[in-house]
Amino acid sequence: MSALKQKKAEVAGTGSIRAVLSRLSRDPMGLIGLVIVASFVAIALFADVLAPYDPSKIDILIKLQGPSLEHLFGTDQLGRDTLSRLIHGAQIALMVAVVSIGVAVVIGSILGSIAGYGPSWLDFIIMLLFDTIRSFPVIMFALAVVVLFGPSLTTIIAIIIATSFPTYGRLMRTQTQTLRNSEYVLSARALGIPTPVILMRHILPNTIGPILIVASMDVPFVISVEAGLSFLGLGVRPPTPSWGSILNDGYTYIRNSPWILFSAGAPLILVTIGFTFLGEQLRDILDPKLGRNR
Amino acid sequence: MLTYTIQRILLAILIVAVAVATMFLMIHAVPGDPANVMLGPRATPEIKAALRARLHLDESMTTQLYYFFSGLAQGDFGFDLRSKRPVLDIVLEQFPHTLILVGSALAVSTIGIPVGCYAAIHRNGVFDRVAGTVSVSIIAMPAIVVGLYLLLFFSVELRLFPVIGAGDSDDWLDYLWHLVLPVITIGIAWIGYISRIVRASMIEVMSQNHVRMARAFGLPESKIISRYALRIAVLPSITMLGVGVAFILSSTVITEIIFSRPGVGRLLYESVLSRNYPLVMGTVIFSTIFIVGGTTIADLINAMLDPRARKDAN
Image 1 (cartoon, rainbow over the protein chains, first blue to last red):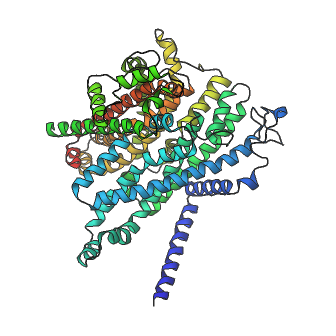
Image 2: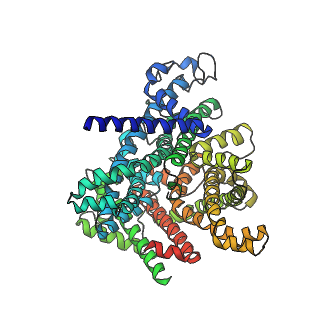
Image 3: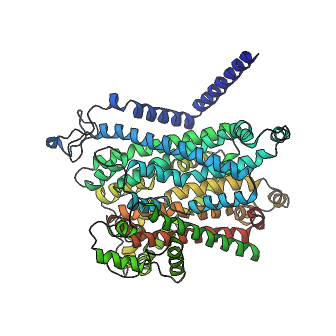
């Protein structure tokens, strides 16, 4: 009996994922988004294999070269291959996005469901926290924190988590508030099921869709914060290649070698378009109402 | 409306207070002596002692917080470590440049209103589809790439616009000329944003009873749109702008640095590089007040124009 149920659930699960994917690929915007995001993830995961050169191999003799067959995007001021650095930069970008959004979703969901389900004074305190954090401009807050704790990848991730979990918290709170008075939650309560179990088993699974959509649309923002901070020299430390620090190299040599700047901006634009298109289409497919809540 | 206004202002003060306290506690979260953190390792014991005395660092934490808040309430944001001038004076000197930049970017973003309106009226037409795709693509475009590309193409390669600075403040044409690219950098995403919001709410409003009623009376379509529909459809974008002030200020920091413009953002960046902590703290607190003020004003305007918003807030 339970084996049959499990089988059924599996079929339903793959069926719905397949249905979403096929609907995504039928729409041009969705298809573009899907292809870009998939290639970005693939490039980041297989950076070591795909990069034609070692990203930190210095060769002063070929510094600041334009595009050629050997170096498709040219070389930087130390003769390092720009394409290889960008490919390895994708790794950093993906890592920052996955870790910081992942943790922010968990923290936001917990606080948001407490705010939505718990007593109203707790709701007020949590909302005050959310509103306060929302009024910090991310980059300014980040600059202040970097003065104190010093620049590093961990600092960047911590800053992004601290400033972005309220988005998920607010979303979770609204969802929980709508669900808390639904019949199945009320009957679960009447049966005496403890609150944490209700939240985990009955409310969370129903809120995960909208949260995933917002998370997907948040990826470009997170990546551009990392790029921004690394551009300012306050993020990833050299020689680790990050899109932001490559942009900074390009900015410095904007007159001698515009190619560095040009090619470092391109992946940021592509990834931004990819995740935004994907998120928009996912939203249209999964939850048409969400568009107005954000 | 009065009750709502008072409630909203009290909430704003509370938010600023919590934000300031957070900033304050952050210094103490760093292991070691706050005087060391602020002055760096090369400071002499005398300078450190002077700073300790001025910031009441030897008193208890609550006393320090009390001194800090009462100072802020009197407009005392602390003193610059280098020039010894009051932080507030330095920030206020730079602030007009930032305000002009942000204000112009907001003005440019209103281009999104007619775009969204036209797209909503000719829904699913060619214009709507093109505008939709373009706005979605530019909304999330990072300001850093937009700014650097504009600088690369229009200033360095084509030499159409100046590369650095804000121009001569007395020569307004020159000042305006220096303003173009930075304003596009910040404003372009908001054109997309506002056109999307106006389009969505316009579609909603156009199907409402009062618009149908106006149609039934035989009013010309252009009058229905300008007098009855668009007025309501613009409201949500005011709220969005209020919420967006924090975001706009973030891209302003990047923009000011890319184009080497004077302003609060670059002041902050330079004080970060020179580890001038009182100046960093003062700039961040000042910006927070500015943002909370912006959000509050947007909420109040919204509540004034739309009585339903007052209820929703409670």
